[in-house]
Structures are given as structure tokens and as C-alpha cells.
Image 1: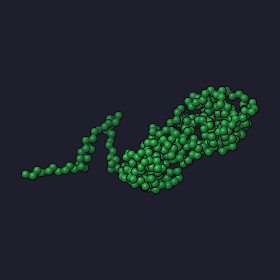
Image 2: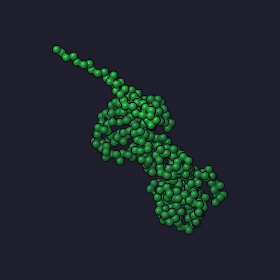
Image 3: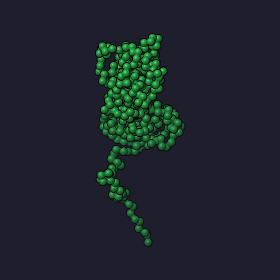
Image 4: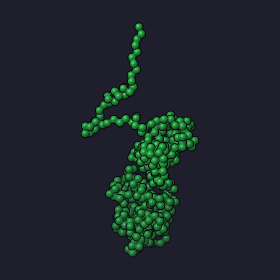
Length: 353
């Protein structure tokens, strides 16, 4: 007697049964949290892509300094592993524009794996994958693609502030720094301090907060650009001097010749001590040599405020060509009140000197 075989189970019905058996999870108000079917949403897809096509994809516009990160990552990427072949790609489902450049619907970007792509293209790995496994996310705008990027390379956790700054100033602001100091983001401590001084109702944290960097960068963008193009001896620029440069540029303008001359004096640490009457820039430079007035320097907020105030006080004296033999008692208030004088013109300053 032939035994009758049981019919194969219907996978669709099994799936529905499984869905109906999903546990109920409630939120804090006791309401059930819904389940979302991303499998059939069209937002997420996976497929194999040939290396040649993958290598031609553009980096996402807010990507960090890939070449700069290569030096840190190359020892981990010199041996190709299967895990390296899994990459994330984003695709636009609608036309969009970023930094004045239009992109067509269907344009794809590398969301992650940019350092891997650079490693492979540079011949720094023992092998290159013939194909990569793509996890593709489809979104209608650059702003949503950026959110996708932040999920994988989080602005609040996995990136250092300095690295994130590079992605913001190049990708969001459309500016490519020329100095290593700005390119590497070694200005974020100064940027946070000057932002607290100029917008105290917006920025209150005494330490840099990554979520604040985009707004701070946009607010001081022209000053950052001018500083980036001005500096020559980058190692001479501590965070206090960077902050003072940004704030004085905001006050006097980025093209003011007198200010540029003074900042170049700082850049070269060119003090003039031949006379007993020191100019403002000499006072700053010599203080950083002797620590006589302020004591040891640092970047704690309690130290920083006094240091920046001292620099701004003497930058103002430099701008009015005023020789000061003794620092006034109200010098400590200079940084916190500097924004009050931003629109004040030089003619008025000369009248008061």
C-alpha cells in the first residue's frame, strides 16, 4: 500500500500565520507598537554589483576626509575579507540639487565603504572583490540620504568631531579647505567657544557637541574660509588664537588689511620687543611665551574664556594702533561682550582710542 504524502506547506500562509503570532509590544502609554513590512516596501533591496561599476559611484556628499582616514584604516584593510565586500548604497528616487549641482533620479552614491574603495583603488589591499554585495536604500532626497549616512556613520557617536567637521564644510557648505588644520577639523573647540559667545541662546554647551557643528560652521563659514587661506605656519595656531581670529574677523571683516597683518604676525610669532611700548600682537605673542599674565594655558572653558578675552582685548588695541602699558581691569569681559560691538565701525573705534 502506497503511503500518501502530505502536501507541502504554503509559505505565504505560513508567513501570515507567523505575522499573526508576533508578540504584542506596548509603548509606555500601553498602546501596541506596530510592525512595519520593509521587505515589500521597495525601500531596501540587495544585489551583487561588479567592482568596476561600484568603483565609479560617487561618495555621499557629507563623507569625511577619505584619504585622511586611509592612514588609520589601511592596516585593517590590507587583507581582503568577505565582510569587506558588503557595502551600502543610496539611490535617489527623485531629481534633487545639492550645493547647486543637479542630480537625476536614479543616481547612486556610496553611503559607506568609501575608505575600502580608496584602499582597493590605491592597490593597498592584497586582493579586490570581483563583486560587492550591495544593500541599497532608495530615498527621494539628499536630506534623507544624509540621514541614512548618519545612521551608519553617526554624527553623535561614531565619528570624532574633527572628522565630522570636514564632511560638513565640504559636503554641506561646498568648500574644500586648503590648510591641514581646517581640513582635519582642528578648529572645533575654538568654533564651539565663539558660537557660545555669539549665540548664547542657541549654544550653551562648554564642550563641542557634534549636533551643533553644522549650524556653527555655517554661521562662521566666511571667517573659517578666510582663516584657512590666511594661515601659513599651522602649528603656531592654538585653539585660543583660532577663536580670537574667527571672532575678530566677524567683527572687523574677513578682508580688513590691518587685521590680516596682525593675524599674520601671530602666524609667524613675530613680536616686536625692541621698544618698551609693545603693540597688541606683541603682547599676545609674548604672553604665550612667558605665561606671565594668564599663567599656564589650556582648553578648559574656565581657562579658555580668559585667554580668548585677553587676545581680543589686544587685537582691538592693534586695530586702533593703541599702545597699552597696563591691561585694563575689564579685559576679562571682552569675549562675552564682543558680539555687542560686531557692527561697530573702525571710525568710531579710532574716535574712542
